[in-house]
Length: 257
Image (cartoon, rainbow, N blue to C red):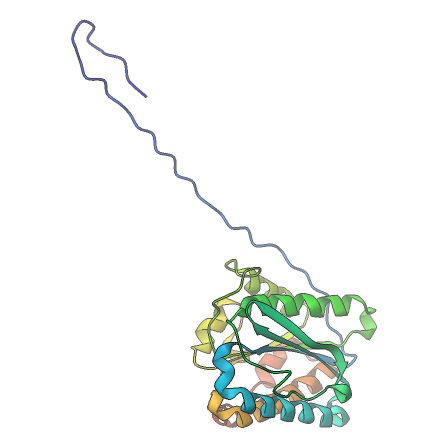
């Protein structure tokens, strides 16, 4: 904008006033509401890292996961019915190996069904699994719904998600799921699990570090913790109380490091 000359007849260099407009971009986080979990057994949703960095721990992961499944099958007599969903992530893919499978019918992993490759689309895998479990609950009457435990394992930080990667989205989803009495376990290796987990809603109570060189101890500890959580959920214990009373013991944490 050029201002008028205040001295007619006198040559004056025009004064140019430049107006700068600042645009603020605001990211709106959607509001989430998920189906409330119940006590008709427990649905365990496993989000398993199959990215390339897990190649060195392929055999140990397969063996550990299979022992975990065996332990959960044996726990039916004390912790009630269980169902298992297994999602693997290796960017750009998220692969459902099986969903809502009765624990007695869960197949073992092998080098064909678990082949590390690709990047770490961790956030997309978590968001996908939450929606998948919610869809499963939505198909059931409330008194037929199982409790929910989501187990997340990764040996690296997020680097490849494209759908659920907006800041705060997964954190909002986890908070809404916990409000519906779902429970989460976050296990991280080669990262600061507590710092990474806190960015998407995990607390110190349900977060633990593990070592890929200690996969047998890691899955043994996960087995014990999951069994306690299953028993608590069958008894109607809230997620908040489960986090306070049924998570990893100091001995279990030690055998994961």
